[in-house]
Amino acid sequence: MSSTIAQALIEKTKNFSIEETLAFLANEYQNKVVFSTSFGQEDQVITALIASKDLPIAIFTLDTGRLFQETYDVFHKTIKKYKIEIKTHFPEAASVEDLLNKKGPNSFYESVGNRKECCFIRKVAPLSKALNGNEIWITGLRAEQSENRNDLPFFEYDAHFNIIKFNPLLKWTLEEVQSYIEDNNVPQNALHKQGFVSIGCAPCTRAILPGEDIRAGRWWWESSHKECGLHQK
Image (cartoon, rainbow, N blue to C red; front, side, top):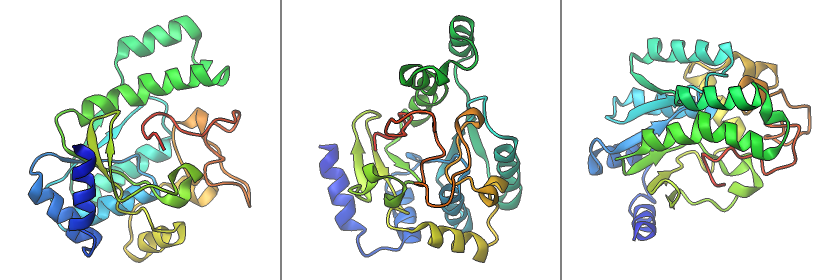
């Protein structure tokens, strides 16, 4: 049924601009539309689009406890510039304490299983709580970020979280994202100027080298699909 809703939304909004689609969703699903930001370039574009139209879309972020200081800096600049609230969700303290007590602070380097356990505690579980009770989840996913995302639609049903996802920047290139940020003076993470493209937790993110895949800087020590569990693709 929810897949049918996603397809209907694709048809309904196929001739809408991103701003028009966001406004439509905010009106159609009042108080049930949320946007999750990690303050990357794509998310900053979406935040600017929401804030510029003063749309009633709740914005939230996940603070894993292992973020870069530069991420907190752009967080602060964003709420000051746009005069908006960005709700912060933390992992359960008891779960983090238990993980560190049993496996230490760097267990994620030891195996993919350990890394996914850390991601689940710090990101997936808090996200589940943040999405609970909502109907539309707006994301900053782009098709060119990963081979796994090439076939993503603008609207899709996420069975894991039981919610409709809207991917407004799906067809944008990185160059288009960067141009929007420059043209509209959108705050951005200082690490982007240092070769960091996809920015997550500090111990799990590095700058990429010329010619490397856009996701190469995430969990670089493993050969998995480079996903943390927030998005199945």
